[in-house]
Length: 177
Image 1 (cartoon, one colour):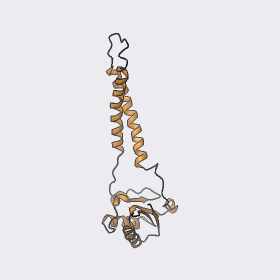
Image 2 (cartoon, rainbow, N blue to C red; image 1 turned 60 degrees about the vertical axis):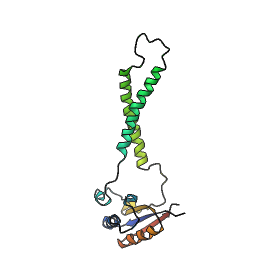
Image 3 (cartoon, rainbow, N blue to C red; image 1 turned 90 degrees about the horizontal axis):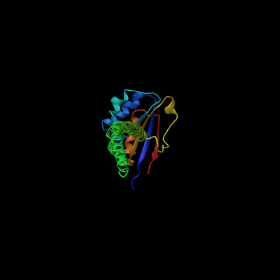
Image 4 (spheres, rainbow, N blue to C red; image 1 turned 90 degrees about the vertical axis):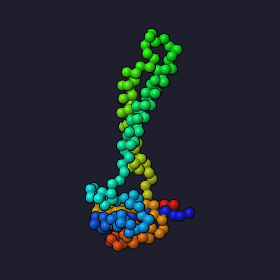
């Protein structure tokens, strides 16, 4: 069984951290994927998208799935509930009332769209995930951390060397499995 590692490099400034990430993008650390790199900073830094590249955003997909489920699912639910009252005398009225179902389905579209968006945010932001041991309080103050996950023993060595070539202050490591 191969062990997986997680490594956190602490840098004094953005220049060293950005240079390290740029070298990872240029494949100077073979086996390290840019998707496994997370920058931890005390402040927001918009230039990081130029270095890290655009990351996929799945929130819109979650919202679309939730809205579609709310629209179709609620219409089927309401129509099914109304159809179960076939034995009752309706006095010539339609068994399934489409006009009222459209209004209720529209409200369910909004409700499930919002609920799925919230669920997508929780899943996408990994809020319910167990936090790793790799964190340094200096990241909250004045240092920049680069967290790289899913490394094997070979890529761990090259990543350490890459961090040292860019003036890393400290390196923290954790074995995942």
